Image 1 (tube, rainbow, N blue to C red):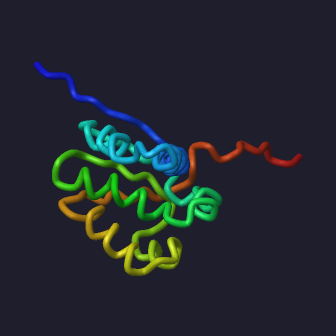
Image 2: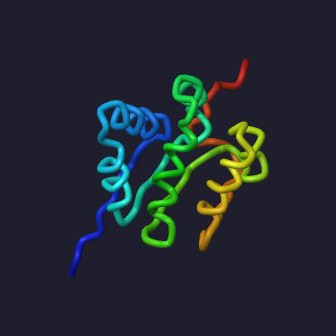
Length: 126
C-alpha cells in the first residue's frame, strides 16, 4: 500500500515561500514540490493582504501552484471569503477568473455555517 503525501500551508506563508524561491531563481523547483503532494491544504486564504501588497504578483505565484495541481492532485483551500467575492477581494478580475476556473474545476465546495469554535467564551454578566 502506498502512503499518500500531504502538506499544510497558510496562504501567506505559501506566497512568501514562492516569492523567496523566485528571488533565488528556484521558483520552478519549489512549484514542482508543491505540486508533488497528493493533498495540499492552503489555509487562511483571505488573510494574506499584507503579503499581496508586498508581493504585487502574489496572485500569479499562487496560480502557478493551483494550475500545476489542477486535475492531478487534491487541493483544499480554507477561506472565509465567498467565491462570489473573490474578484473584489483579490482585485485582479482576469487573474481571479483564471484562478477560480482552476479552483472550481472538478471540485466540491463545502460551505460551513455557524459560530467559530475559536470564538472567545464570555461569562454572562451578573
